[in-house]
Image (cartoon, rainbow, N blue to C red; front, side, top):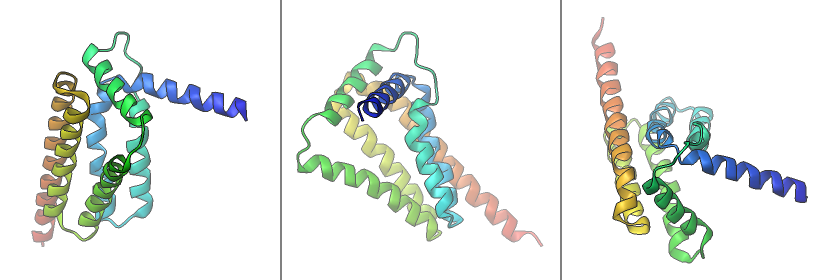
Length: 172
């Protein structure tokens, strides 16, 4: 059992070091696109695979040689948050995060791309707000650009996909 625990600890440390690579912060929001697509196509398998990609994306890129001090500060605050005590409100925040992804999938499953846009934007705003509240403005400032780029890219992809689908519907 100790060997398994040691292996799990090593895996978490390996992934955590890679989470310091800001490229994963730009990629993560983009993974909402396939999740929304598979919800639109009503593919539970696609949704689950997209969700697993979202969870694992922090470890896709190599650990940076010299991490940005603001990234280190932000992730240290995130780690302290996760490993600290868990009062009821932390469970509520965690549930709200999961519920927001489910809500996004339900919106696209029901073919409501406008509600999907609202939910995607709300997810990004909530992430930025959470980061400012729990890490402080200086560290959180490092997350704003990836979150805004991600929000813009996801929303643009949704609007372009809807426009493309409408042009297909108009063809004879």
